[in-house]
Image 1 (cartoon, protein in one colour):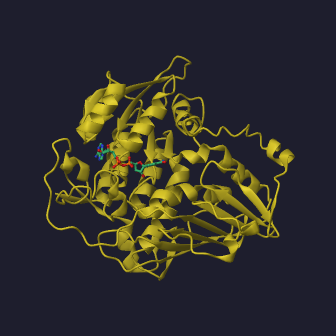
Image 2: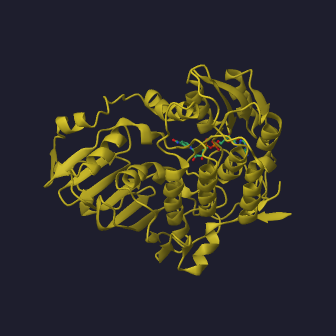
Image 3: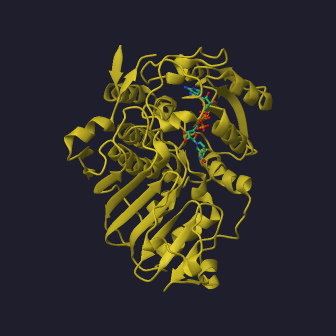
Length: 446
Ligand SMILES: NC(=O)c1ccc[n+]([C@@H]2O[C@H](COP(=O)([O-])OP(=O)(O)OC[C@H]3O[C@@H](n4cnc5c(N)ncnc54)[C@H](O)[C@@H]3O)[C@@H](O)[C@H]2O)c1
């Protein structure tokens, strides 16, 4: 039986209305510990597991992965945790023994697993981008709001010193109102070739049907999908924009208090129906906010030769641009935000200007930690503390669903190269009817 996403989300809403206990609404006490379940524990999931479990009030009670090698490696670190291959079994068996869920699977499984967790009233830490489809992002946001659940998206740099500093500098008006942001990553999570033919034997350690999950059936090919390379492909990932853009766009999005865009244009090669373009230049136009000029233009460059050179990106004394980053262009100057772990740089009249220390001190951000693990843990610990009633998260789904929607609109624009798409946020539709097909997708019953 096929179920489209709207039907799935309707049934999810019906299930949610039957559930009585609110997610994180237990009695707050200093002794309360958080029992976590982790779905996807290889690669980034392993990092997420390490970071969450480094909080002294966390007990890891359940681990789930469709690859038994990754599951075994995680279980070595948490031998008392119960192991699962199928996240549906995890909820069936342990729904009353878990307090929060961490979802670190490929993108196409984020919404199905997170919606199930939230329908069981569990707070969710979900990796970025929040979802694979725009409708899923809206549904995740709605369900989290309806149930008043603690949520956080895995954009850990949101909690790093340099990004918080850049946000406060922009909001202090240091470069005046901002008219343009240019951001770039030379990473290539695209694939311009054809879909490979034939199939390879499924390795004994992988449950391929569960890996596909709600996506359509497809023969297994070694090194094409699992692990990691699914990012390059339309059915599972979101290309380089969905992968790196969501990190690099987070600070401009937050600092400029942007909502969703009015128009989106992606300059890239024609669609192949299988992989994302290997090079994209995506231009967004946003409505004015208190920190922007009448409109805000945001340009994203990715692919091996990114960024395309532009006079906005020239640095003092002909210095080389950082490998990845963002440049804010304002009425009074520019702010360069390298990605990552480097201070933002103020540029006025073509020269670097020292940041005013009194202004920085007034932000009360403390000092840069400059240790990726320690600084990264802050984002995860904030989620744990919020679940324990002692903090609030800074990238909840109410924020990250809109950021994700914005990113996904640029990804969809890649299906219509060089054509400007117009987005109506109220109706959640493009004016170009043909583009609306890609806002949603159907779920396979597996
Ligand atoms: N925040 C960051 O800095 C950062 C960095 C890397 C990746 N990510 C995100 O983390 C997620 C995972 O990326 P990755 O690089 O680790 O991918 P990966 O393919 O290397 O690992 C995914 C893991 O999930 C498992 N998995 C797949 N389907 C599953 C399912 N249905 N149930 C349970 N386990 C399943 C896989 O077996 C594997 O262990 C992605 O959403 C990615 O965007 C975030």
